[in-house]
Each structure stands twice: as structure tokens, then as C-alpha cells.
Image (tube, rainbow, N blue to C red; front, side, top):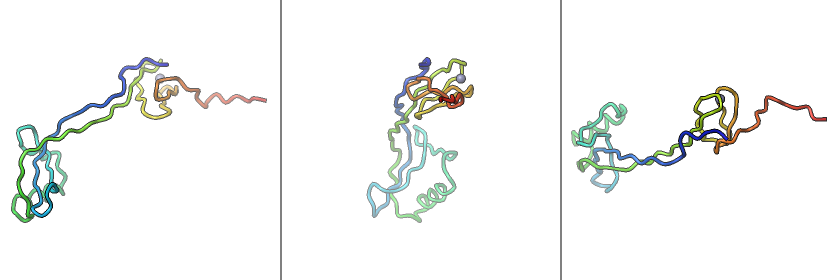
Length: 121
Ligand SMILES: [Zn+2]
């Protein structure tokens, strides 16, 4: 068992966006990333989103401007353990191998590596 540096958990984050709703399809539409003040974050927008945004703004799309909205996003964080060699290993699968070659399961228990094949007879 290695030392657990961080236990697994869920981090909940708020994210903000400007919402344009289709006139014909309530609750559906376009979400454009923004900051808490409702200023669009163009760096987070893909070229496709920029095209959609222009069409929303120019009334080419029949949408209603719904303004700033807020949503919750939960991000799962796997556990992190510290290997005997000092390197931190993310424990997210059944087998997590450190750079030094040691393997750990998702609870941080050391696993036998397949390097030392014994010739049982
Ligand atoms: Zn290691």
C-alpha cells in the first residue's frame, strides 16, 4: 500500500454561458461560454461556435436572447498515490504503473509485475 496523496472525489464547478433559445424549440439552442459578468470568452469558442454566434446575433437564426445562465459541472478526480520511488501515480484504472515499473491497483496496493516470470516446475 502506498501513501495516498489525494483521495478520490468529485469537484463541482460553476460555469457560465450566454444562452440563445430557438423560438420553435424551447429549452434548446446555443450556449456560448462566458465569464461571471456575461462577457463572452471567445478563446473557448470553436470556429463553428463563432459562426453560430454570428447567426444568432444577426437574426439569421430565429432565436431568443436569454442572457447569462449558470450551470454546474462535476469533475471526477481519481486518487493519487506516492510511489516508493517518490513519484505521484494517478490511481484510476485496475493497474496503474509508475515510471519506475511498480504497479498499483486503484486502492494503491502494489501488484506483482509480470517482469519476474518464475519458471515453476
Ligand atoms: Zn515509482
